[in-house]
Image 1 (cartoon, helix red, strand yellow):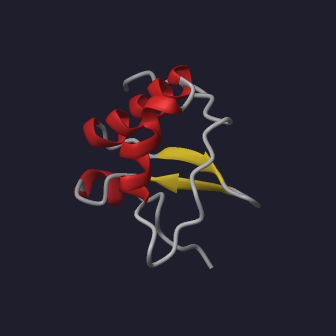
Image 2 (cartoon, helix red, strand yellow):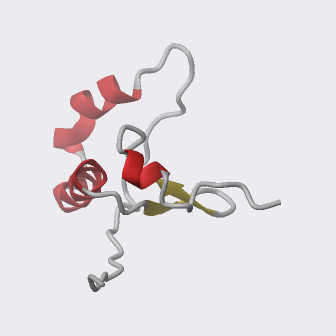
Length: 87
């Protein structure tokens, strides 16, 4: 079995805007990424590349709990069993 290591990537200073029907998060990112702390931009891009290249989900904090994110276009990521509801 492949050894996996947990890494924590700090992105605490990046605060995206409130997203609603008139706000494009992607447009905000392209407009603002050069003015954001570049070390944290690098961490965010690394996490995004990890989602694209791997079936391993990424945990991210929310206001109350941690969420799990994965590339929904990768069957291996979705079928890993981590995203099933357990009542």
